[in-house]
Image: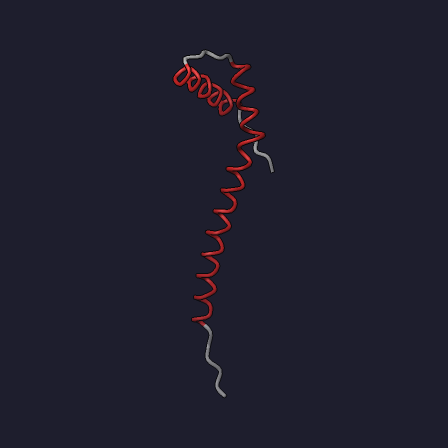
Length: 81
């Protein structure tokens, strides 16, 4: 499931990249070059962060499910023998 950026989001990211290059390297890059950097980030770097976020979400869900499971066991009625 790939989320596409809105025009506004993409434009903001391009501006951020251009500002980064200027602030850190003193280089003014155009929108085309910033677009290439953004495309590289989307294709090569972002998937690592996406997968890490999924792992984090899975861990949180596993912890919550374990908590709910414990609460359900507490609610069980004892059987008479």
